[in-house]
Length: 262
Image (cartoon, rainbow, N blue to C red; front, side, top):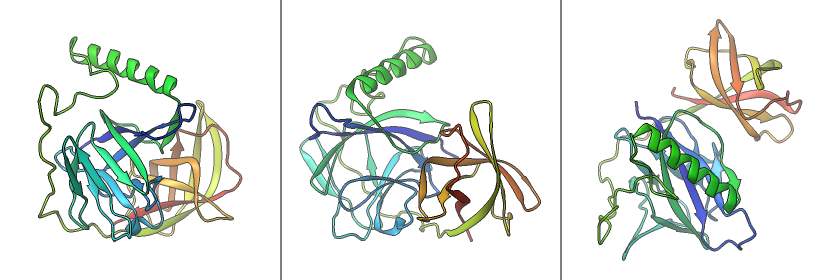
């Protein structure tokens, strides 16, 4: 199974003083995750997934853009080429592609594979610069001195006069149908600087250790900020989870939501 990809989306037209970088993770296929809505805002595990343009990782490890049936299509610019993302046919994205949607221009930076999963977070230019430097150092140590290019992962277009054509996969696999599964939270506690959660589910046959879900606000029935959780254990109807982005119990959360195959 392919790894997740660490991605950064840069809002090219944002004022200098704003946090124009959105650091995020595109998930390997099979779960809802990173998406763009019709006005170009970055979403995480949206409930209206079918109306958002999805960003996910294919079986061969490529970043894919999946156009949704929306009144606002995504246009991809690459060098002198441009291509509207067709509905239902994934389009392969590469480093330095520009996405046009809802009056926004988003520059794609690919940072490589990651096992971590977190919801999108905004960073200032200075914070992003430090992240680029740390990524370059890590790549240099990992690859024996072959560092990542400053500002992005090694690009498939490096050294080419003209980037490759924009690839649309004409025969994508059949879409994966998913159903929503909610589990009731029965306990929360801080351990090792992370929030640990216990929950009770009516059915756990479709769940597995390592599956990600979201803490849900009981008043709004929406995802809680930084509330991404990962299953660490399953015993009968009980599950244990960890929320790496949270350190304290969240009183407004009463359930955990998963999207699973039927």
